[in-house]
Image (tube, rainbow, N blue to C red):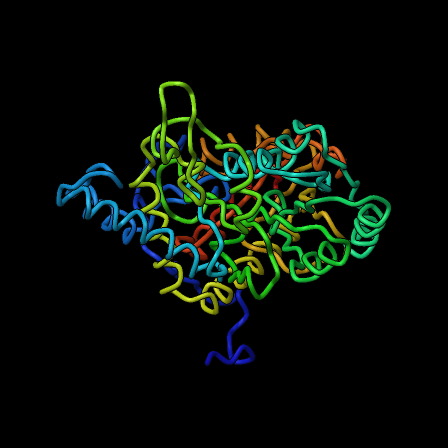
Length: 411
């Protein structure tokens, strides 16, 4: 077991990447000539791990239709697709009867959950639009304004759930803007105490922290493959089956039906098939499973050490720079995944991002990160700059960023 006290300070030693990602040696053109690209935009789409690419190529050579085919390759492909569901279930600690539905992405998964929602939903204003707009469209969303601290925010959620029954509390697992990790066990207990279920948007969490649906008491969980080192537009909704079985099929079409008559009498499947009409993104699902296996093989203890050391290096570097100000949602939450957002005095976020790319070959994100209410609440309605990293990041990438920003601000 690693002994933390024996680890040198993060700023005093090199930190190597933990995983091999496709395109790690990619060169891009800058004002100073070709440079190795430093990808610090993992929160938008993480690059594919080489293990995932290898698994994809293996599956592609035997790719065929799923489920109703009698041919050998159809059976192989079906087995891979259904096995991917079980990989997801095991990875997030799902219950034996949880339904695992493959979707296009997190947004699609939450829209499916909203489609199946039987009552009101309580949601915070700090959410990514994917965990806000689908609920608002139902007309049954009750938005709670976050406070300066999580403690105050939890009290506001408690009061809202106490004043009137709600079917669901929908929360993020980790902020896509600042990386702050919310206490999910506590939120789950809070929801259940008032007779509500809880849905967790884990898009920014699954690649960074272990999750256990059964252990945490989470009823529904959603995430995207492209946030966890898998290519393609594919995502997951996993959770309790009753609401999903009671809802009308998300899409009408082949695969969702047990029987169709010419007179319009249709018998629909229950389970995942009910909401997966049409040909599914088999390779996307297989890639998600390969990515989850790779993350599990690396181990969350090692991932945690790696991210903590890089975050320490990043935070200390940003805090040394005049005019650079880091953002945070809550004053009392310290745990973060590998994300940091900041502003630079006198420089628009887009200008900072373009400078980093054009002069130094560093890719970051700028704007409002599909979280407009949160950025407005933080006093930055024009947006900010976001740095995010993962298994393919080393200390050299962080040092390049700090050096480039120091040049920008004249430090």
